[in-house]
Amino acid sequence: MKSLRLVHNNFFLKVFKDIGNSADFLRGVLPPDVADLLDLDSIQTEDSGYVDESLRNHLSDLVIKLNTRTGNKADVYVLFEHKSYPDENILWQLLKYQYLMLEEDFRAKRKFRIIVPIVFYHGKSRWKVEKSLFRSMKIPESLKKYALNFEYMLFDTKDFDLSQNEKFGRNAYLMSAMSLMKEMKEMNPEKTTVFFQYLAKSGLVKDRDFILILFEYLARTNDIEEKDIMDIITSELGSETEDVMPTLAQKWLEQGKIEGREEGREEGREEGREEGREEGREEGAFRKAVDTCRNALRSKISPETVAIITGLPLEKVLEIQKELK
Image (tube, rainbow, N blue to C red; front, side, top):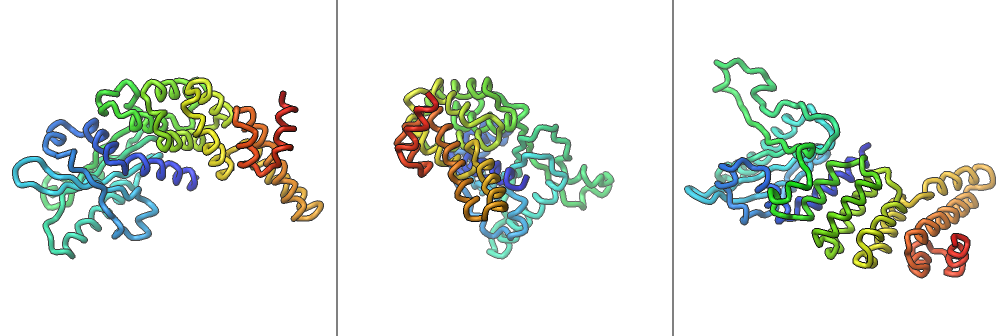
């Protein structure tokens, strides 16, 4: 579970540390009066290295800084907190994070910053966590003026779909990323085909780096087979992603995502117990490489490339290719 949360968090940061994506996202979710007040073209990511290690385990640690447009210009900091599950401790986490930011201002003897917390949620169950510190503490009306209070803004991907293209500035990368986060664990071949058709129509397939990030997240957060993904890529995107396929296959190999890797590892363990640990490892590694080879060849990756990513001799790869035919 912890490793999967890390996958979600790393993907979120890769998407939203891009200031263009952050700006288009904020234009789509901020209330109109707030969006009009802020200069969304002034966005820059903020170094938040002051956050202590215990807090890093709970927060996505993404803060962006921007300015107000009119009046007495002020620095506004948007604090993004990403969640893939409902977290009852969210108000406490956000409070601690805001305290650390304000403490930094105090120590530097500068004016306190304005902080806007946004929770980006893409879990499957409905988010029911209270958004106001006042309401969560059930403070009597007569005491409210003496108590600390703040409220976070919630963006729930359940309320998002690809038809909201205009709302988010026709940003195909942002739209694709939020769609994958919404559909985590639920992408089947049919949904994946529709997703790739959107990529083809948007023209995003020409950006190799973005495509790799999207494909990798899709494979690691869903049960759909890598072979099926590669078949759909070939069918829907054609030659435009030919140069991406070997890199994608290599990433899946390294991450243990190609079918047969875990099976080969377990077989290696079993044989190691019976015939010697070293011999078992070698046998498991060979079986894993053969399984990887078969899946890669079925996905139309060239034998030469398959030989490189599996470590098998080209002659063995060609032999396996002949067997498959």
